Length: 495
Image 1 (cartoon, helix red, strand yellow):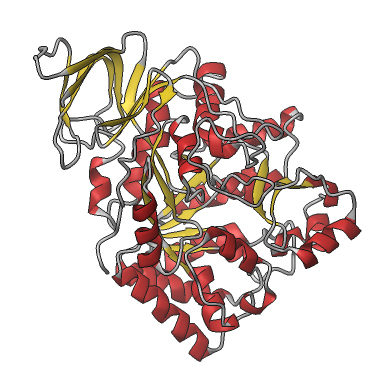
Image 2: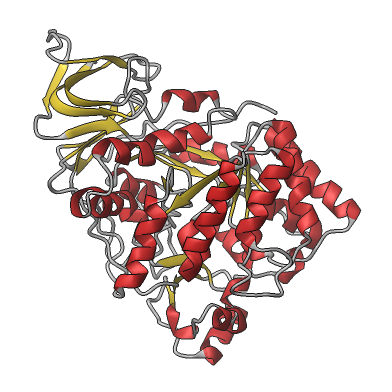
């Protein structure tokens, strides 16, 4: 049935429109579209009409960097205004299994995956068969066997695996280079050439910076700009805030210079001073933490809430359970200077908001629940629940650094444009003009905020009043609808 959103402040970053208008959502059973936008749209007997006066209406947020892969996680993201949640930094392999399992379970939000560089290398270099599971992927991260450089034959083998995944309509290639920081830079160039030939983006967690480790083969952020310049590939720099830490100003200046010279590099950031990964990750060794000016006490285990007491305990848990999810505090969120670094990463021209959302874990080992509200005792990184609402609170409500138009450009329009070349289905996302997908968020500009904390991490954001995915309501009057599973796969064109 068609739905008319009446009397809101409509923001469309595609056309630059920001003003009072109504929005008509079609009732097409094949997927809702925006049928009309304008003031005083006529009512009709077959329409559901919703009064959204006093609220901001815009395209739902497109998250390029979400590892939740669960109904529980996607519901938290829905309450944060997200309508499309994609795992592009890590990806999953085999791709067809990942899509099939998501479709079989049902998803509240649209979903999609890149081809997994890490899984391809782990299969060839370490004989680890990928199973399209995030927890298996986390367990592999600390395995040194796949982190080494490849022989010529091995390089050919794992590039061939990635070619196969691109042929199966992956949304590009996800590259966890920071987890294999001493692998041969020539391999990254070979990967970049493959991406360019396929017309597919890469999404890279870059290796260490030279300020952290002068022995690194190449500075992580310089490497991505160099590869983009040499090959012409479209390259996305994941979570520049967490990989740059105290050096974010230098990194952003270098990326800006590369972009000015023609490199196709896009950048994302999230508004937190702590990241989340597997405790066995190479950059969490005591030695590498010291290089960053950090120590073992900056690491917290997600499933138990334990803060690591000392270097000995860190070495113990890395040996016993390298796949255990954890949080790493890389900035001090109580320090105004560190907070300013986060603001500058978000304010950087065309910086995209992306969450790096993680699954929710319970102490019995479960990482999924179809119960809502979520059962007590679950733990995740608060960015899973609060990234977009926190970015809006910080950058629009509190600092005025962004207008609402700019906010929707950063959260909806720009991330969708990263996918335009690889996925035709993205071209109607991130916008609110006629013919756009009816992926729409209606939020209260006075109350939108995150509520999740590091110690109460599954609290949903506040202020999202309505959320539509393909025209189907997933949030209505601030309440999640537990029977709504309208999420559809977003896939690339076979390359």
